[in-house]
Image (cartoon, rainbow, N blue to C red; front, side):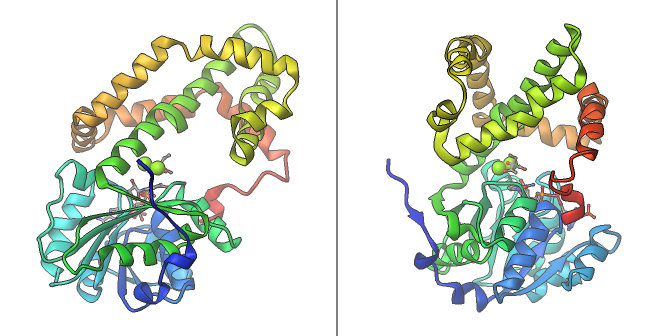
Length: 337
Ligand SMILES: NC(=O)C1=CN([C@@H]2O[C@H](COP(=O)(O)OP(=O)(O)OC[C@H]3O[C@@H](n4cnc5c(N)ncnc54)[C@H](OP(=O)(O)O)[C@@H]3O)[C@@H](O)[C@H]2O)C=CC1
Ligand SMILES: CC[C@](O)(C(C)=O)C(=O)O
Ligand SMILES: [Mg+2]
Ligand SMILES: [Mg+2]
């Protein structure tokens, strides 16, 4: 089925400029949405708990910070950009008691609606603006006059204007410069989880770590292995980003292309595809969501252990040493947030 794609000319920025927006959370997405909304002439306030470490950062960047309940009470559009596992508690405690007829409840990802963790009342619009990229790059691209593509979806249209409002919001954070696609909460949630687990984060990280291990265990220098499987990956993916896999194959040598065509399918074998299908099934039937919610409720023991193991992987120390010597590598996102 053909998708609908919207650009800046299709969006009416004055719609979002006429609203009082509360952004709940000031992390990766929260800071990007808030600053770009503000720069697009939108009346925005931030909702963060009293003890939040992000409060000082938001205030330093010239934003007004309230508690989540105060921000929700003042606003007529509430965008929840807190961690997915915390959203239902924030919604019950701070947002739901402050929702008024015709308000809009916005999400940056459909997890809590798709898996029935939040059930909004029927008198408010429920919509999503989900940028297809990390928040720090959403902001960086906006500042550079570019944009990260975004998905919009309407779960509930109480006012009859929810789609125009979502498109206006997406344009205000730069999404309509690159293209805004209309979807559903279900499609966004399931494709986003699949993408991050199988390809973008899970798949890519495991591929890089495993390639590094194979080379270093065979006695090659870690620095050479790092350049080969991590640093150069960005350069190869840049070519795909610019012109697809065909453009990447045009730029590499014929030798590389023959290796790509004949060895690639041995690495990503039919068994890997079967595993990807299983992963998609666990997303579709709710297994992953139940597991993640339970893991979070238990204090994230497995998450913490695996994250620490990842931080200790030898590729991290090698990469840090080499990146410190490359002045042209962009500043870490922690410094640009
Ligand atoms: N990361 C990304 O680029 C993308 C994220 N998304 C979606 O955006 C949403 C936000 O994710 P992300 O930006 O990664 O989140 P982060 O973890 O980067 O930031 C979460 C923010 O929420 C704050 N927070 C925590 N608890 C509360 C609370 N009780 N009340 C109010 N604020 C709270 C945190 O405060 P403190 O700093 O004090 O911890 C922090 O500022 C999620 O739905 C995610 O799926 C969608 C697309 C991409
Ligand atoms: C790829 C991870 C992501 O889905 C994103 C940056 O788009 C996320 O949830 O952070
Ligand atoms: Mg994503
Ligand atoms: Mg995601």
